[in-house]
Image (cartoon, rainbow over all chains, first blue to last red; front, top):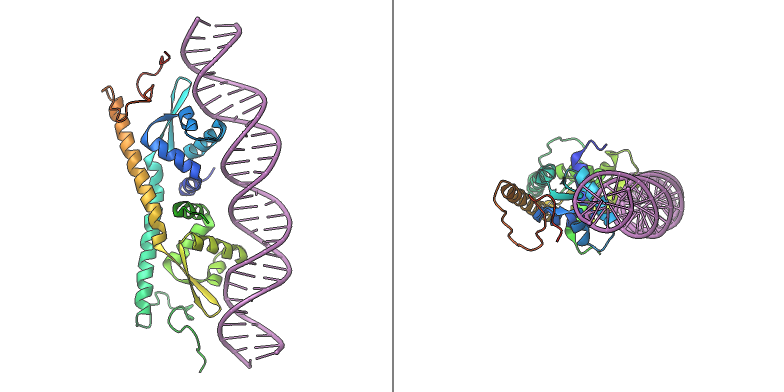
Length: 127
Length: 127
DNA sequence: CGCTTCTGTCAGCGATGGCTAACGTTAGTC
DNA sequence: GACTAACGTTAGCCATCGCTGACAGAAGCG
């Protein structure tokens, strides 16, 4: 349904309770009931959270009799890590570039149009 | 208001449009209007998104006349990276442990209580 | 087969979230 | 001071979300 795995993972992680569940299942393989017992909400709610996590690829299910055991699926976080690192690197680079530009030189446009007053020259341009 | 910075950052990033904004501002310092021009929604919507990102510490604002320039703030992602790495490591470790346990040996409990039927021994656990 | 255990699913409800339109505000221009 | 440009803010609308309660189904036991 959702063609973007990163989006789905991010949305799944946006919920505190789902993060808690994931943390639990990252240390041990647990049954649905055991997970639910760790919280003070209904098992229904937990089941739904687990479904979301499963659809996001952050969880794997393994059946054992009537029980369903869940454990975290680290590869599900791979896309996110990639996204974060990319963003991190880009922002750091840009920050550095801006500081350098600020620090004296005219500035290094990259693409030179649309320059209006991005840095230095904060006020009074009037003659 | 929200004492958990990771939670706030995660919730901010859960929205695709906010990620787009962040991507834009990670490459250049842009004014609110310039950001808004890149999308086909109202400037109001963008302004609200920017506010969320700012509150999450993922953005910094700099004023220049009537304009407000924004750029990504890489440190805002630090907590998330930490969270992800921690989760990643834990899940990987657990996965490895489970595989080893599966592969023959009784299993290496670590903490030994609450062992009921987590792996091998698929049925009959009742007293 | 009947009973119990463990669990997912569905319907409905209150809360949250993103969007638009109208308004308020600040800085610069004449 | 009047006007304009560039923004943020507020109120209200509709969709989504998380939660509960009731129900359904599969597996083991007598």
